[in-house]
Image (cartoon, rainbow, N blue to C red; front, top):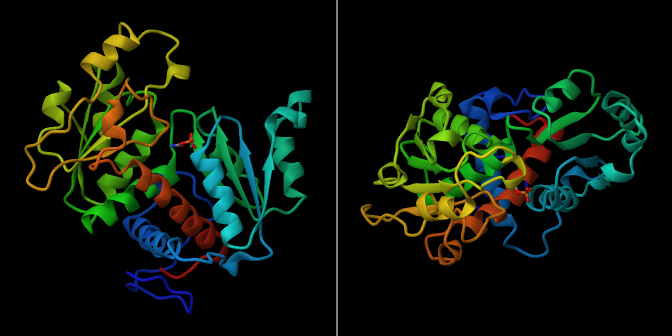
Length: 321
Ligand code: CP
């Protein structure tokens, strides 16, 4: 699928993009996901060329507002905005007036008067992007909220799968690890189920709550059983920062009993490996597997830039699907 810079190409008369914000995978329909993945795929191919400047959003302003650490998401939103010709501002929470006691509501209303077009927010509290969307005069993109959602991660994961398998329907994906604390898992499960792919989840039973089955996935224990015959094993990061109470005896034991040491060999075309990053090498994943030939981890990063370009463009320009 080649990149196009001319008039918008259509791939099916399925309607218009009708979302003011990107708050979660729960709000997207299958046609929305298909649109963003295919547009992301165009950008992914465009990113291989040089020069890569693409001034489609020149004159628009993007503000990044991250309350939690990030390398991939924040940097790729900044680069995505700049490649599209946007002006980009990163707000530093530590030196903002939030540290003098200003409320988040007043902070956002203040930023609103500075006329950004899109605000990308990562926040440790679940539901903050929805709260802001109620009164923000600009587009809100959820870059991860608490334990709830991380929609651009799910979209980039779907783009990675699409590029590997040339389809998003009928795949079987095992998500392994800390499901309980994972907004990445929740968003990816919703995305894969909307695209009619199968998802199984596994890990330490204390980190794989039975409620996850309401999202249409199967819990399978032990991990070796869950990953048998899947197209992809999707490892989750052990979130040390959210492990205040013990969900497993020790990190060492987690690595031995729940970490991935080899990929299953029972699939004719082989099983691929994904991880949202950052990876705890040697804990949830063996050192060698990270850079192995079945690893899609670095391709996920490249797809992250492409999908974020697609998201920014779509929110600002509201294209036909
Ligand atoms: N996967 C992910 O969100 O990575 P960052 O925390 O580095 O943005």
